[in-house]
Image 1 (tube, rainbow, N blue to C red):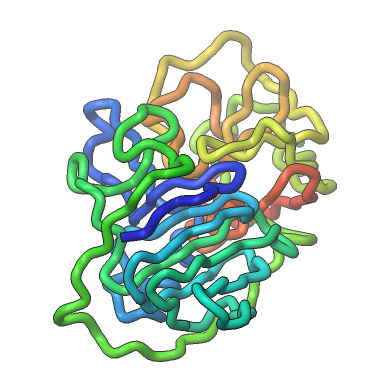
Image 2 (tube, helix red, strand yellow):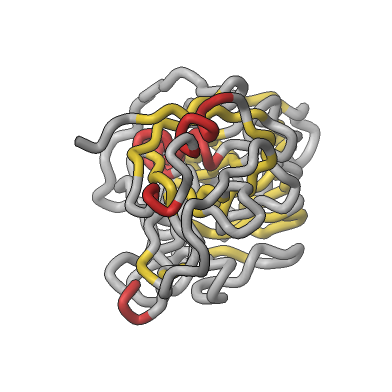
Length: 291
């Protein structure tokens, strides 16, 4: 069991999401930066889809009632293991598996870059699944509640898991980030130069961003048509443009449908970059032709 002594600004349990329910109005949710969660799970021998903890801007303190192998990936935080008794506190690293002894407390500082940090525990976080997923959905409220002080999380069994191995990946900084997009499906709703305007200069990430989407401030994108679309299906990475002309990049907790036109869709390979953008960061778009 893991006791949450402090969750930081915002922390949730996440796996790779509850897919296949969009026709029922259920978002997919899951880790905003899937690549980082998958890496953390591989480092401790878990299946990539095992549930872990997603921290927003660090700041958490987690107490371990039993010893466990863990790994921390994503936005890199200063990590300290505070051991019980006379043993001195120890600094540990990001991107490598390490042991946390029974009774010890793992403390997270603020990340040096990025926004979301992932903790995987060998055996996975074993909260009850909802519709086949243990993910917290901030939009619909499905899944476990966001972590609060005093919450206790069960850890699954480690029997039959793969051997622990180091699988280092180079850190990815979102500074000077570029998101590659495929135009459409509604780029014809904008003036011909809108895509060029989108890619002309960086946008700043708004403080109103969250797991639903990254809200951006910069050049306004002008429409060529009046009115609004009927509600239609949305995918993760859709760049939706409301009447303000300021684009929004949909993340893991985005709604299944929306009525504002989508000028382009961020490539799946770049979604982890979008997930790590913090308020005030700058991001550019580049266009990759769809045909």
